[in-house]
Image 1 (cartoon, rainbow, N blue to C red):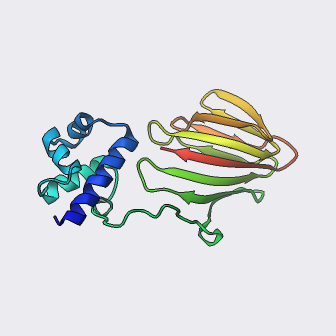
Image 2: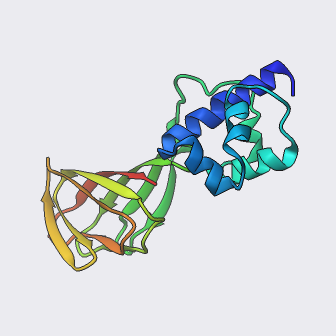
Length: 184
């Protein structure tokens, strides 16, 4: 590897490992590599083979190209309205719109939801450790997580485990609007 690529790999592996909250020992065990190989990788020493880089990328949940990306992510990444995607349409006209998202594992998503009276969105459990935060802008949201149900009124926020079956419902006569953040 050239010094530039080696530095990029070192920087990226360190950042992704830290984002997962893993020690060098934990990453080594998960990737089936020695701690020494990872220390050298994170210090941009040596010349790791492709197999090592693939194991590390797979373990960190990113494509190999992400590890060797020489250019750093820009300090500000803009998601203009033209990139917002409606991924859920309710039977009465409600919508779930993905506004922005980060690289996979750990990822962060920002959503805007509108539920018309009587609409409900059921969600399967996400990957282990996923957390969601909701901030209700208008109306009263009925939030169901497993067997628990809470009403979240306009101005209130709720944090919950997204790795359990959950649902967002509008059981009122007025529209419900909320912002949702998902972190896995």
